Length: 81
Image (tube, rainbow, N blue to C red; front, side):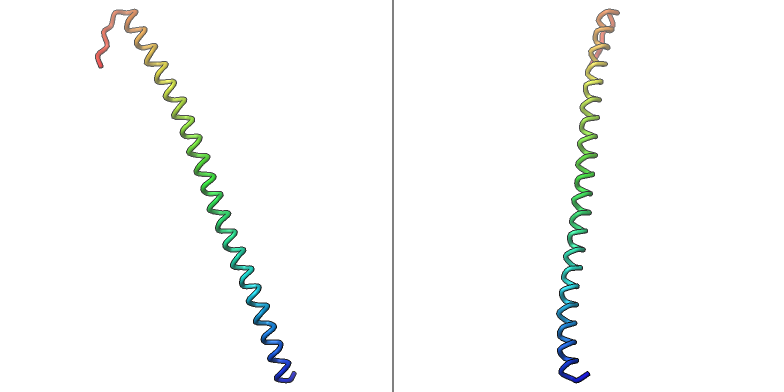
C-alpha cells in the first residue's frame, strides 16, 4: 500500500469514526432523555394517585365527622372543639 493510499484510507476512516461517534452520542442523549421523561411520567402518575387517595380520604373524614355530630346530638353528648 502506498503512502498516498494509506493517507486516503486514514482520512476516510477518521471521517467514518467521527460519524459513528456522533451517532452514538446522539443515541445516548436520546436514551437519557427518554429515561428522564419516563421517570417524570412515573412520578406524575404517583402524585396523581396520591392526590386522588387524599381527596377520597378527606371525603371519608368529613362523612365520619358528620356521623359523629349526629350521634352526639341524638345522645345529648356535648362535643368540645
